[in-house]
Length: 157
Image (cartoon, rainbow, N blue to C red; front, side, top):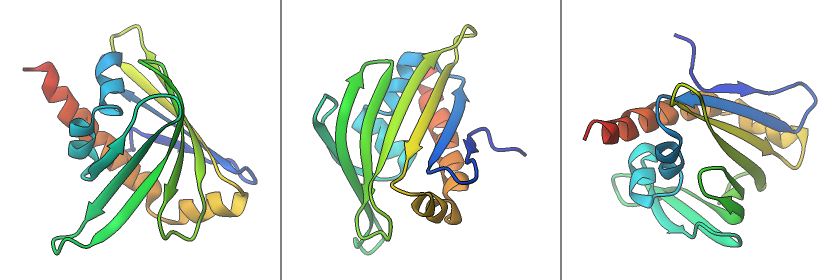
């Protein structure tokens, strides 16, 4: 089965273009990226900080069964327009690659679905390629599938 989240990486470029259409109305899709309780469910991580406003910040953390931190990431929110866009930095602590800039754009489609377009810019082509060597696309698609399932359940309540 082909992944529903599409990742486009052109040779020699230092960015990625990611698109996904969700069978969710735009306000619910946007909420999935801005409500800590929902983020924790679909991302499987703890939200330590989420200040959804210009110059706000965010930090997420994942621990293993022994309580040891295995992943911590954070950044600064540079632009926040409800139901439209979030521009933020993203940096994983103790990772071999530096921060990236993410432009998340949300769009309502005529059929009532919501679309997410992400444009991620890395410092270099090498950093982008290093990210792509990880199971990045597969993990993102799995996370987006969980987002669809979890937030889709809110529609049936």
